[in-house]
Image (cartoon, rainbow, N blue to C red; front, side, top):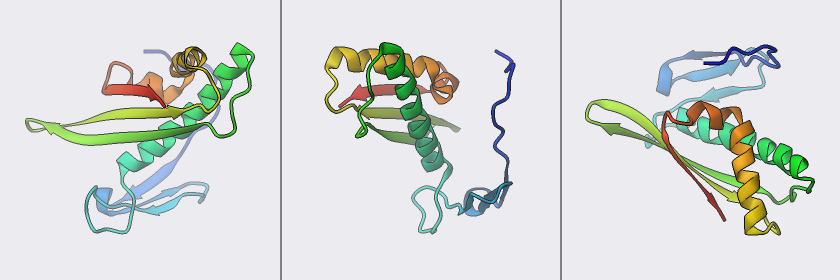
Length: 138
């Protein structure tokens, strides 16, 4: 386990009601209803939030990787993230897939970008070895 030497940002939220509740950030930029996955509720769920956060962070990591390789990341770069909530016996687990679109980038360079991005992205590092994941270059 690594200890952070320099904290760049701390996200602070207050959640009431769990999966059927509400979550607000301390800076009031986030104020969302929560609903259980698959329910008729009007809110989002933690799995969607995780998918959105990871994909956004991963695109940033792809940008850093591109800079390191001396190339320009296409503006049309995208990441589709899928996060599954499931069970094994009585225990709950997550698994996830990233689908990375790098228009105009050849396969070899795309593979280098994806590998470097996983080494940089804090979400990728957090899930590595903890949940089943896959990354597909589209």
